[in-house]
Image (cartoon, rainbow, N blue to C red; front, side, top):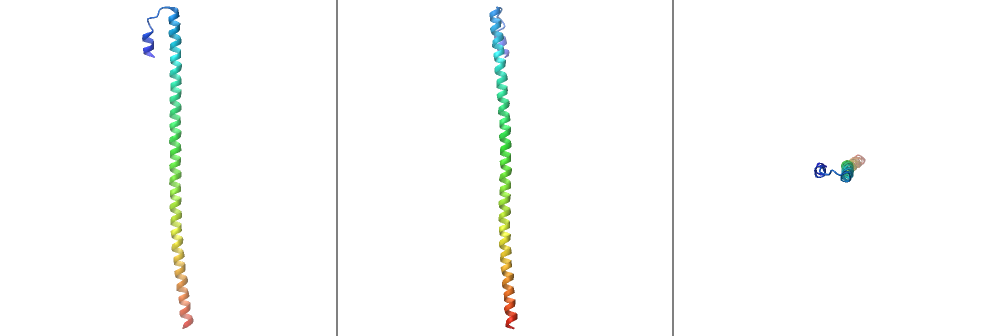
Length: 100
């Protein structure tokens, strides 16, 4: 904007001054539009960061759920094995008591 003013200070004629004022107003409009676009870009980037953060949270939750299910499955398998072991020893004890 300063360069525009420096280049156009020499115009003394009325018509030239009007053109300079119109040019300055157009340049100011373009700067406002550019700033508006920049703010929109910053908002978009902030939204994208928010989306990425949310997706990372979902990924962590899904991984935790998967680990919990795997742990529960492992625990269920251990309980099944122990139950079978207890049942087998109970059957063995019954056989021993019935044969005695």
